[in-house]
Image (cartoon, rainbow, N blue to C red; front, top):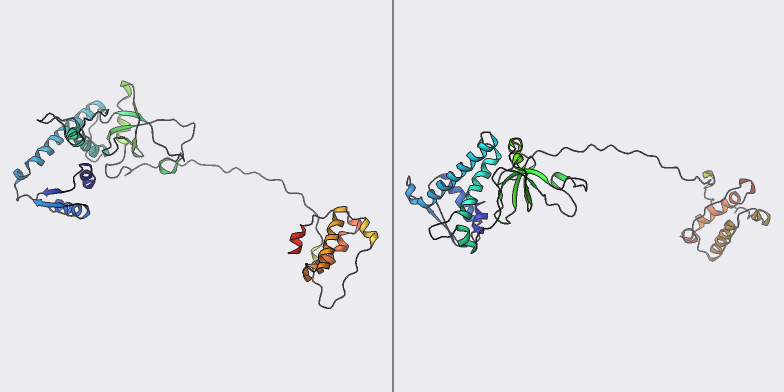
Length: 317
């Protein structure tokens, strides 16, 4: 978060100053190691808060502003906010965001105006207000936690407004599934703008927007069982006839012309093609023995069946 703040300030050479607390020393050492540009580290004298008077004064101003926001939220919701609640850290952050953009200094400008050369004109909502927001959905319509947005789902969802993003000025809305970023929010009627139940159920922190999020309930899908009709069964020759003739055995007799008359015309054409392949030597010996062994079965008139033969290219392979 410190590195993100330094990048937003658009400075390269910075001075990191702190007191002698071990936690702050470790934080500054980590920031200096990851900072791409030049960073100088300064330490204030021990037990001397006057050395950091500007920083101490800024902290006091932000803390008092955050206290005012807390009192306003508690009066409207009729509850007492705890420091363990997720909205507590968002409250401190939003107080600093308001101070940087709307507090006018002695020179007649705000901190935001001095940095970006323009005034902040973004619309804001009261902290903790119950609003409707439009969740950004990618082209795949996939939402958080693996769910997909359906066409008949509501276009907007309720949530708690907790501020705006620093980098993109998007709205930050808290929900039980975490804090969402969105571009569009809509305020509700005055009697529905404050909802204590929704406020207490929000999850997520500025450093982890999905911390403690409640997972969505899985939709129980019942499998649809159906039966497909069986394909038409075609009678095939007996598998006991699929044997390979031994070496030197006599070849079976070829069928006579009277037997050929009882065979379907399509089968005759295939038999004629098989003989041509046999004469040209393109059939394998083992396959030729198998075909000769089945000629009698295919052309027997009493079987009264049609055979679905494969193509000639498959036979020749």
